[in-house]
Image (cartoon, rainbow, N blue to C red; front, top):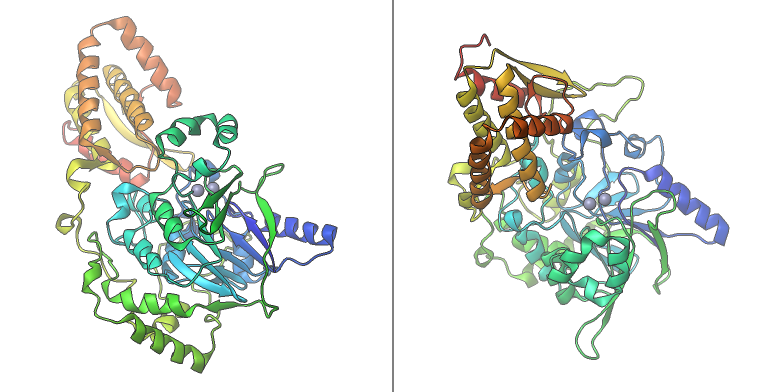
Length: 520
Ligand SMILES: [Zn+2]
Ligand SMILES: [Zn+2]
């Protein structure tokens, strides 16, 4: 069996399939399967785009919608996992896995599937210690925080995969298993990507969850993406133990190493995607403790026996066959002749594939349950951190409070698809500039994937802020800092607050207005 492996897709299905066709005609061979290691961007329409966490300048429809609408058909069966740039609302509909388009199969948030007699497992998302122990509490439409946390790997899905006992041939994870760099030429990697060196040496580059799974599952092959470079390694599991060949690939760009074709010994076809008995038995066993709030699952609480689950799954699959349920569209596809950017969000419909699978396994549908309120949640990190958006609003209110006397007017200006809160008034320029300067420092200290600031960071913010207030009498410094921040934030004059949604900008404006009698 000839399998092509691709790093990140980033919605460029057209280009990847074209490359596959070229390879096939150059070598006179046929590729049986395409595996993609995440950042697939299964964006069907403008509304799905709102669930995709990417900077504004990268918000592009790309080519998935053509395959979803049936205009194009994937020429090779394609199996993918999720990364950190996904239409998360759509993937959530197919939490247990399913077809996102004809011939394109999503492996699920965690999953195992068979292709011919080859067994393929995968874990979607990226590892983040803060979200790891929480349940899947995110529901579309997502806010500033949940649009990021929705793709964080959860302990529940990892522990389910840890139950797999039968051998796995291929495993996919979006971010790399932490420590994998020790098993390859990491010095060469560090020369190519110097900013990884510190993390490689501190052993923090990659996913702890993936490393745990690599050690347990010991698959023959492990493929990853995310870091946008090629890296190969060989893992020896114990002395004389089995080997795992690891390969990470780039995203699809000209002259980049995004594709690799391997040949795997397998039984002759038919090469078809099929349900995996052991995985469905695990799914049945642990569905009763599926955590859908901030609380994590209690693994001791499941009542079902693995053997009973396996028997039920086997007999069910014998009755109906092992092919997954067929693709069914659940939202209208993008129409380039008639764009509909303002269509309101209709939530997550129940995907018939998911409903049918749950019926087959005699399980209830849980994906649309409403998570409990934030207040009632258990999250060790929550007590020690503050959400970015709240922090911004809070700080803004403080700035406004201090500067109420010199601010004359506040208004919201739309700018390049985002909104900017503008406060007019000479002195406020200094103060907000100072605020933005510290804000930028905070963002720099806290990497992009984080949605919360820790108490330490907030404390640091306050210290820097007090220091700056003390220095504020120095007119020269004040001017320099203001010039720097205004340059950074691309504004002409007056004062601006960080861009965001219209609703956010309005919230800030209302907060600021409370301290000053502006007309609203
Ligand atoms: Zn990624
Ligand atoms: Zn990527």
